Image (cartoon, protein in one colour):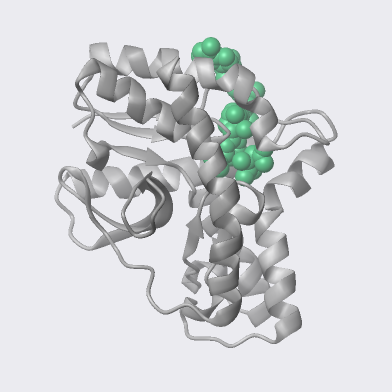
Length: 244
Ligand SMILES: NC(=O)C1=CN([C@@H]2O[C@H](COP(=O)(O)OP(=O)(O)OC[C@H]3O[C@@H](n4cnc5c(N)ncnc54)[C@H](O)[C@@H]3O)[C@@H](O)[C@H]2O)C=CC1
Ligand SMILES: O=C([O-])CC(=O)C(=O)O
């Protein structure tokens, strides 16, 4: 049982998008994945380095070239989006974040981060204003931290918490614990895009099953349509880089 977590690379400074990190981090992720393919080709790989929407496709291409690719074992880490969503929704509902679960789908940048508030557990309803506030806050949670740190980096500490949470869930599933479901950015057929974040069932081999998106309300369906263009462009940018 092997798990490789890749958090290497440069973080954002205020005014930058995650995509602005591409020029440096794409090469770092490519080199590290070449090392994984050589040294531990059967490892499950968690990619944290941004822009996740591009670095995961890069990792997939590196593994394909090396002949070690297994889509069940490659996951982009979007747990921090879920941690933020659980926290902000719990604040609005006046609940303990530990009991709130919000699926977050799409990708890991700006509008590609789409919280599915209609599927929150415990079942809850929100006003239109609350939906707008929560969606924007969750989509911009990373930027909020980058601005607050004013040049000293991004959300390192909360990412460490999220990475540990996702690693723990993955390792428990690899050991045989049943029924572990997490959101992650993975090779996917739930939409027409080749990679997408959604709920996945983890198991002894990594991803056992990618779960359907479930019913979305009109606001979420519109969000899904809007995010696809940006997400596709980021995926294609990663694939083009890896093909060079
Ligand atoms: N997926 C997510 O939700 C999140 C992703 N991130 C991303 O994670 C990455 C790291 O962020 P932080 O840990 O906050 O930055 P940091 O600057 O605190 O740490 C980055 C680490 O990467 C190492 N590094 C740099 N180049 C390397 C190379 N070529 N090979 C191996 N290691 C190398 C550095 O020595 C440093 O230890 C950034 O790309 C950031 O955008 C950060 C937070 C959340
Ligand atoms: O925003 C950033 O640059 C780091 C990150 O991905 C996050 O905190 O979600």
